[in-house]
Amino acid sequence: MTEYGGAFRKWLADVTTQSVLEFGSREFIVVQIVVNGMDDSVGFEDHLVPHYHNRHYSPETLKISEPWYKLGCSTTTICFEELHKIATFVTSLNKYLWVVEDWLTSPQTTLDMKSDTGFRFVSQTYFDRSRPTTKSITTHEIADLTTIGELLGIILLQDILSDLRLKSFISSHHYVLGVKHELDMEQYSNFLQSVYFEIIPVEVRTFSFLSCDGVSRFSSHIDALTVPFDTSVWICILVSYLVIVGLLFFLTSSRDGFFILFGICLEISVEAKYETKNFDGKFRKMYIINFILMVWTLMCGTLVPNYWYKTSFTMDMIVPSEYRSQWNEIKDIIDFNFSMPMETIIDNFYIQRLSDAQLDDKFHSKIRTMLSIRKSYNGDSSRLKMFSKLAKMFLYKESDIREIGKEKITRLKFSNYSQLVQNNFTTCEKLAYIDTTDNTVALLDYLRRNVHDKNYVRRDDEFFKSTLGWTMPPMRNSYVCNRLKILVSSGIYSYWDGWYKWKVRLRHVGNVSDVIKPNLEASLNFSSKLVTGFYVGGTCVIFCLAVFCGEILCRLYTFVEMRLRDGVNLGNFRVQYVPRRY
Image (cartoon, rainbow, N blue to C red; front, side, top):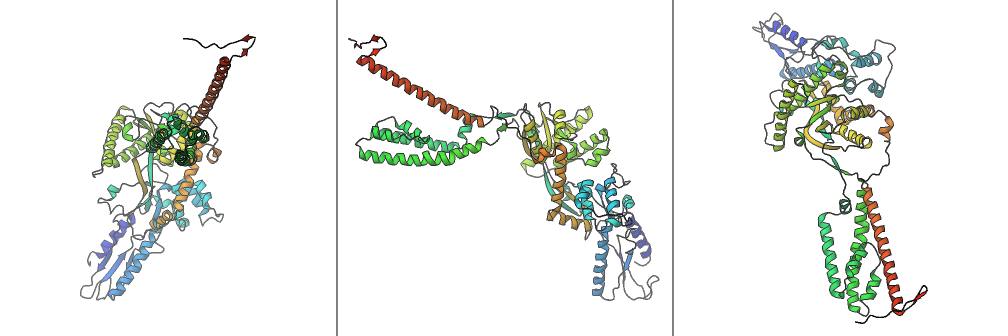
């Protein structure tokens, strides 16, 4: 470029100074061509004169960089080596142009934003070099004063935090690290590569549904007794039992084999009397039957009851009771009304600063965005097609309901579990609670320990399942992107994310001791599985007492009959037994 070279360079510098993302990840090299060996701006040179544009030239970098760099290209090799060196230096300047969205406090979507009070206090107190009173601080102390997003920005930019100019955040000449949000992979796969250069997925967020509508505690004493073995095992045991009973009846012509085998299963020693009664002098049969009884004793009198059945039965006794519901997936409760904590999808600083009307609008806007992502599916997966159909139904109901003033998905403010239960769990009729899986697990545990008049069940569903992460602006050698990848891959981010979630859970529960050591009451009701064990023991005791009483009556009847037959004194009377003649 000869005639318009200087004007173009001035225009390009002005544009990139106003907006660093104006041209995406493109880099500009303006080459002046010397005509007839002479050029006013260059002098007498007989070669090309390239100028590399510094897209990161700004008030933050003006002391350490220049807007344009002239390349000395006497040879091709030297030209490319110098170009690589300058381009690497220019791209490294991006670390001075970053701002974290969580540092911005204004709830409006304009560029007129100010620093958050928490971050401002931390940065001015602990990272301001101009203050002689600046003192050191640990990361945990910073975490107590900030949110996870603010702390993430401090960790990423701590090397240059003291050089950042807080008032310059209103400028559009910055790269912005946005909040962690749901990634729409289908959108990013389209023609948006110039807008979002890179995405960093960090976690998969799953949702669950919690309700007490149509939920009942399933407790069957018969099932509790049979659950250690499945149906096929019980059939095999029964068939073996009947075969051996038939074999014993064939060899001895006695029906006592039925009771003998059952007594062996109950670990009762009854073989000796059985052998004395049926095998006196029958040596060959006795050996055969003894072998059969030995195998049956080893298999069903020792291994099965002691090692398998008793162990499984005892383990099942301590397993919580099963809860059954009439619904299992979101498609089964499409006609329900839903409640969702706004903290699940809205950042806490918006909740603290927006009015109720603004929170309603933002909440339903987030819901419609989540549903719109799921509605736009054009693949072949039958399950995702079903999700798309459900999303369209929800979107139709959501828009229609917004007009008539009734809400299909209402927002809740989750301060603590106790207040949540008192205000929102008074009824069960066609009402479901939606939240992340971790939150619903903790809430279900709280409900089952503190609410005894209702039965709640939780079901996982993939309808609202999403991938959370960040979208990075287009840039080569991105300072924040590279450091963020290290934080995620090393587990540092997971540690701090779990630490903040722990703090939130403590706030929800309201008592630290309830989380560290839950106060569980030892209660036993008639729906408990342990009652089955008592029923079995009580039934056996009653059966034994009945048999004992029956044996006493039989002995007494035999004794009286024998005495009457022989003729004895019963009291003051002499009774003579006289046989009846026919």
